[in-house]
Image (tube, rainbow, N blue to C red; front, side, top):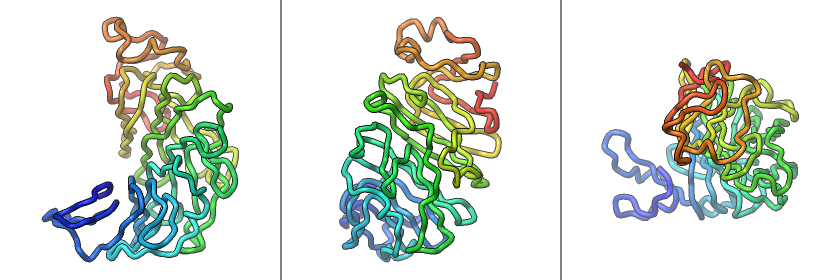
Length: 289
């Protein structure tokens, strides 16, 4: 668990490990972070921890660290050094492929010193939303993969609030899906769900496999073999008959809280009503009927 200062009366700054059966704090796991831990990914005996922090124990680890899953001991890693030391960046989610070869990192992408909202500087280069690392060289020798999330590239100042809120990986590790918010912006990724295939991890110009527009904020993603599930603050989605490309949201008239929407239903051809939860077909990116 993360984000707690005290567990069972014991200070556990940022991270604590609990027994899955009893719920008791595991005192053999000792890890503290200088900030907030927000996400975890398990890879064999290695636990990846992401969030918004500057140190893991006494070791400099900006926003991401690898630790021993049993003891919490901080392990060697080059991944953290790829990210700039910036309080405006936060790792929102982490996933490792089942074969342990690839680490996928989703960032909240707040201002990162570039004045391009939605951008992170990773390894000195702009990355948009998602960053991938090759783990096969081993701990301490991980390498940054060419994937840039190129379609997240934004015009300066055009999408100040575009954020990746959640990310999930498919059960077979072949793709990830991200959910986005966007405030009142009109960028292409404003209030969407998007799939990215890991077969494109070596392509710096890779694009999304599909993008599903919900017309309001997406906060949570889950994936099974049969469907991608997205939850959030929305009332609409792209139905099985939606045209491609599906319309961008022109203004807030498709918000759940615009008074006529619940009564009047969908506005665009192919749009379907989906109140706060939508099941999406994994291959097409369209709502399941």
